Image (cartoon, rainbow, N blue to C red):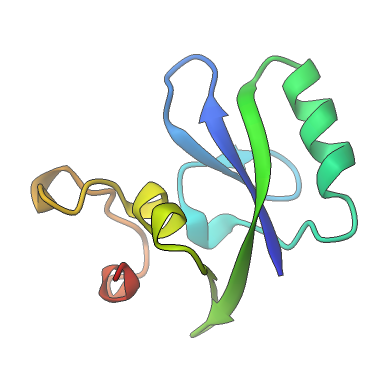
Length: 98
């Protein structure tokens, strides 16, 4: 499974491709394995997202989970300041950061 991520051009927030638009919640991300390069080029050209790129992921408990620790931290926010982390819809999602 591959997810497309980047940064919102206006806010700098980490965003994930949902198949239609961008979301700050990794659990909204969809598999882009067949079209990742095409989607990344198109979305960067619209100037809504900066430097989109595809990452490896897996499905866990019905939600996408980035495989690399760097991308897990990008998905949830700082690990040293829990008060600043993103509060996703799935309450146990933070259990898989490390």
